[in-house]
Image (cartoon, rainbow, N blue to C red; front, side):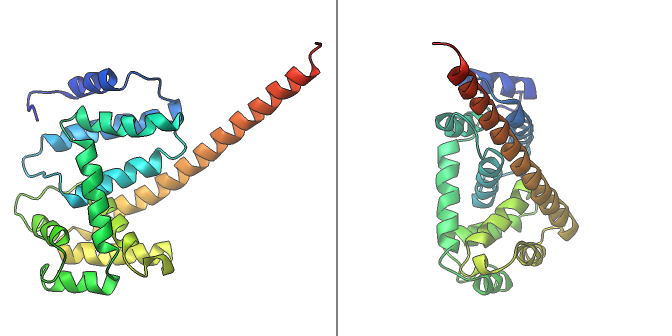
Length: 224
């Protein structure tokens, strides 16, 4: 990753890789992720590990829900990554592997791994726990979202309400050495923004549907 690159350089690289029009509702997502990935790529203590990969893919997939055309959605993700020196396909694979490994275990087992500092955990998960313990570990909101997303993949997690799962993320994050208040704030903002985005996408789809019906009525009513 070139340390001399600026945010403007990353944006130029992105638009070169993704030369398509982006609907206004998704431009904020693109701008925020471009800047965030750029800053992370220049942090000395940052490593694109599984927790980051899960968080990044979760944020992108959640906020790009409803993106049209659908076949441009994954190229958009890959372009955001490549513009900042990341391999988007590798991060996808890393995130999926982490989710699959957690999916074979319960929340109680995950808590047990923490108390034993990763002993007995799958290799990828154990490496995540070790990375957080590094003195130069760099925290970002994607770490908090990645933790929550991983917990959602655990056995029995679907039986918990969202707040209970967030509480588990706070508890586990604190046990991992993350700052509880920071995790709480980041997960709170994530939850609120997801709800706002869902409402915006729903409104957009309703508006487009109404416009299609208007055009259809106009066509049916026009003289032949």
